[in-house]
Image 1 (cartoon, one colour):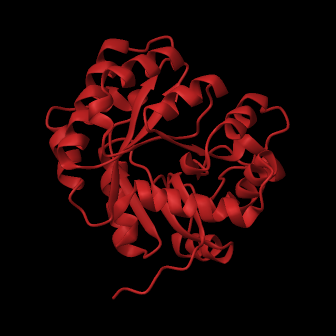
Image 2: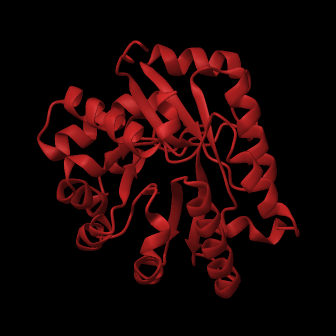
Length: 265
C-alpha cells in the first residue's frame, strides 16, 4: 500500500522552461523551502511542452502539461498536434494545455483559434486527459464554446488565472470546471477576481502563479515571479473566503489531485 502524501502548497500553472530563472536547482530549493511541494509547468508550444517533460524527469516536484497556446499558433506546423498527443502518455504529463481563446491582440485569427482549441479538446478527451484553458478578452465566446462541447470536458478542465466575472464563474462551474487564481488576486485593485473567488464553491478552487509573470502584491512588478509566491496567494484566497489558510492549502491540494490524476502517482 502506498503511504498517503503529506499536504503541501501546490502551483498548478507556471512556466519553468523559458530560461528566466537562472539556476533551476536553486529555484527548486527556493520553491520547496517555501513549502510548495508540487508544481505544474504548462506547455504553450512544442519546445515548452517537450521542455516541460525534461524538467519533470529531472525534478521530483515538477509535472507538466503539453499543448498549443492560442497566441502561439503562428508557430504551428503540420504534425505538431501528433507531438502533443504523444506527450500525453508521459507518466508526469497531467493535462493537455494550455489551450483556449485569446482576443487581446488586433491581429487575432479567431477562426484558427477556434479550430485548434476544438482539435485539442478532442485529443484530450480521446486520451482521457483533463485540459488547462487560457481565456482572455473572450468571456462570452469561451462560455458558448465550452457549453457546446461539454461532452469533451468529461475528464476535467481548469480555467487558469480566471479573470472573468463572478456571475460567469458560477455558469462555468455548472459545466464542471475548476478555477485557479494567482498573484492578481492579491492586488489592491483586483475587485472582479476577488468577487469570483468569493462566489465559487470549495471544490473548484486551485492555486497558481503563472510564473514568471503576475507577481503578487508584496513583490508586484518583480520579474521573474516564482512558485514560491504560492503561500501569499493562498493566504489572500483564505482572507477573501473567510477561511483559515490551512483550509485553502488543503482544498487546493485535494482539488488538484482530483482533477490531475497523475499527480497521485
